[in-house]
Length: 261
Image (cartoon, rainbow, N blue to C red; front, side, top):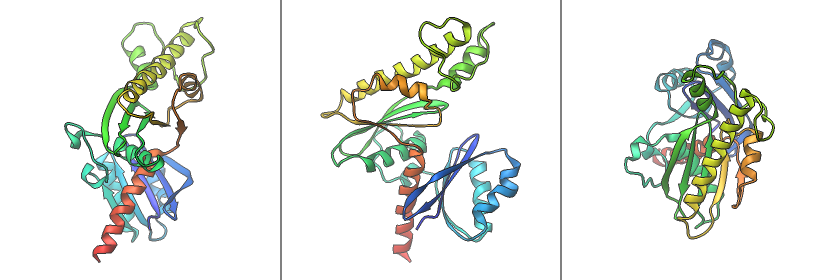
């Protein structure tokens, strides 16, 4: 039985307790460079032996976390390869696909009826829109810049555009009447329009309408509102879809280990 799942990204560590093979409603996020996390907060998670599942895109931080977990007497399964994730990967170079995309696909597959395709929209630093076909295979998708990355690019590569945070506020309605609102509205409509175009394109390849899942830390209320006006498919917002997929993959490996004992 898995007690804790942890996803280690480039900037954050997300940790969630589990019970009866389900995630807790409370997910904690810590900065990878947050010394308080490594020195004190992590002690709350390792004060008693537990069974962990760990994965991530930041190998040094993954190894650091794993060392802390094992030193506490806990057990850990580390998911570091697409081969450890129980979903058929149809992309050209499977080992190059981000594990978070595969975890998302695995979780989405578990949430739809058998024989139903799914599209997963993960809105973060980058936006990924991926297809799980009706047979349950990861078929690939698209990747494009997210809201914060667009904002930083506009600021860095223009002479006068300010740095703004497009995830804060809704920026009103079209047309934007000052530089800040024009930038914010432009990014929100660019991302929502891009997502809509890709979802439609992927759906056109399916024999039946796919379920669409929205997840990611930058799925802001205004962005979700804009997507809502475009939806033509059964759509559900699922927080922490990646962690759900990580839990499914880790549970399978734990069951295999117990079967081999």
